[in-house]
Amino acid sequence: MGKKSQHSVNEEIAALVRSKDTFTDDEKAFIRLYSGSGGQGSKGATGEGLLYEYYTPGEVAQVMYEIASKYGYKGGKILEPSCGTGELIRPAPDYSKVTAFEINPVSAKIANILYPGITIHNGYFETAFLSPPRFTTREKNLTWLSRDYELVIGNPPFGKYRNLYSSYFSRPKFAQIEMFFIYYAMELLKPGGVLVYLISSNFMRNGSSYNESKSIIEKNANFLDAYRLPPVMEFTQVPVDIIVLQKK
Image 1 (cartoon, rainbow, N blue to C red):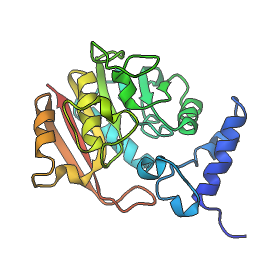
Image 2: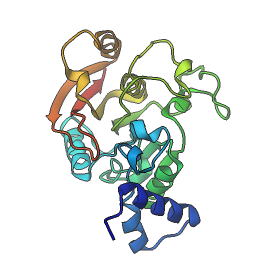
Image 3: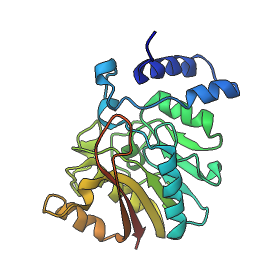
Image 4: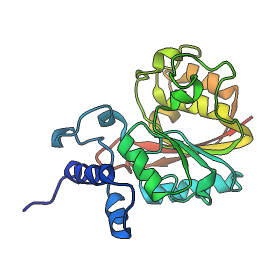
């Protein structure tokens, strides 16, 4: 019998995760093998995850925390706006200080299983800026979250900004979803707080495509550093960078 595809493994793990709420150590080790749907279309995966679910390797997550510490993170509150199964939560010093968002219900439950104490919202990051419970109007005071996070860390989705909630965010207007994730995450940092993202290398390239969005982001952020990486995410050869921004 040939090796199982990642999609087949994902399906087995999803069934296990949905079946109960308490798991053995061996089951947790198996659950850690879950990956996103990105790159799995030919194996039978479907849905929005085909575009966005490319999860962060553990060794990259660890490096990102080291970078955050280098630029001033001292162990305070953390926001992860698109956490997947939580690989970028794993190195956090205190899970009770982590708030996260994740739209895939299986991934969100896995993060809860593996990192007890986190606060995770199974929904789009956009809903942080829309009034609950219906999420059909913008919050008058920007967000129902606090605005004193010390660190925002994440691997936001890349690509054209067009989803269930994008029509609510026409001002400022961002053509790329990663720009939305940078701008609005910066709004939730306390002054001096740090954002560390694994992001498409398109952000750092010269040219006019991103200039308007960068100018908007620059009003609230100081650029501190960037690191060019080879393709590091499984099932895609998209080149990525780690970028570091600081809230003004």
